[in-house]
Length: 87
Figure 1 (tube, rainbow, N blue to C red):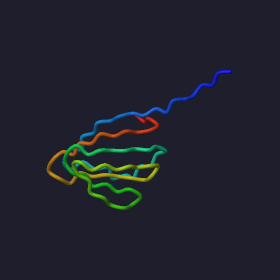
Figure 2 (cartoon, rainbow, N blue to C red):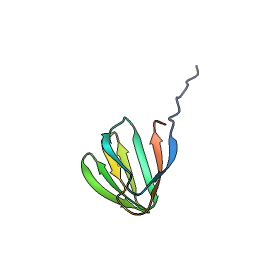
Figure 3 (cartoon, helix red, strand yellow):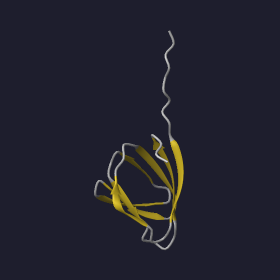
Figure 4 (cartoon, rainbow, N blue to C red):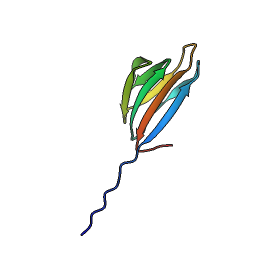
């Protein structure tokens, strides 16, 4: 008897958040998302709690509501790992 396992799929996304860009609408999806900030700073609201993340920081969103903004003068760059894939 053979058993087949379904592999969990992840996707990796490189994001650049331009100065002044923002996601005003809260988003919530059934994913686990982990991000690492490569450069710049980003304002992030997870379940209504505000965080400021900058180069070298990482964060996780696991089925939580969130939104973001870059009110700074320089782009913010992040790399995300998202499971299951959404893009």
